[in-house]
Length: 88
Length: 416
Image (tube, rainbow over all chains, first blue to last red; front, side, top):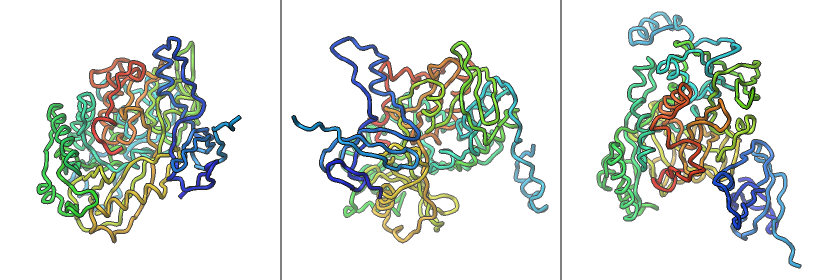
């Protein structure tokens, strides 16, 4: 099994993790009118890069949502960073 | 070029098989073609063949970065079926089954299409209701189908554990008698040989590295063998479709995932059909050599790594042993992975790419092999005429903007 590192729990079995989405998509401002093309791009278009990727993942046992940088050919995990903000 | 026949096989057998010629040429890349097809898998080669045969377009090149059929065409589990829910899908995939039915004769190449049936099990009363719905949809779509009881399945597939003590007992199922398996390498090689005979240039070890654009239109490609001009370019590169999209500047709604498959050591005949047990997420058939060919669901990690891994392996093999406990001691021979191009609705993309001069044949996801003849047939029509047929039109890329998806993933209970 491959080991992914949850920012909250530490190194864990890959089967505990769920791929959520590519990182960096911004939801169109739905208080304004959104064109079909923009909405379709938001819903469906993927970069689907070969090489280094940045993705949002969830650790399903603790619900931590975080950004994982990995290599989509070698499958090496390069970094994991929490998305939660410190409470102020 | 040698015509294959039983007589020829006999004659060559007497002469030590020294008289067979090469099945296709190894030409050098010319400077210009009417059509350049990127990807020398089943879809690319079939497209080249139908361009020449149906449309009389013979100045065609197929560019393959590796070897013919070395991608998903040679990595699938060889199942062929058209047991789909929506009329659009049924029309597409049954065109493929019908073309497969005459393919060995047409290509003068034995693709070993064996219509041994494709059985999808139902594991509960509710599954049986959905199976009935599926059966009705198939019959309405003009596809052959049988609704089977548990007892009928027990007789048809005695090795399958249909007892109440199974983890997921079998209540019944839907069979498509015209479904079955084919020899996947032979499909690629048969189309390659037939296309080559009609004058198509097949260039292996030739990687596309860029697109030649003039006034907003693609007029050729840059390759590891130099630049080549094209009247029109067709991309049939499955899991690497997004990589080409980034080079050419069109966007795709595709995730690439690894899909794994397995073959066991050869054993005596135990299974004469294809069996899919959706609750287990595993399907299996037996090859003519005796190997059990099995597969399961996608990896859940987006990937371009063409190899398998442990989590899916455990799930697929564990499920097989629960389905057919008699196979528990059988050893695996090989295990591999291919990169499949998965769309949001699990239906393919056929049509213009959005960049003038480039057309797409992609998005087949986990089911591209069964669709090779239809994919090639329809893609050839698109490249030759620039127009859809009624069968390919619903699968245009524009459906993701209009919202008119062909959502097989939600409707038909397919394996992936």
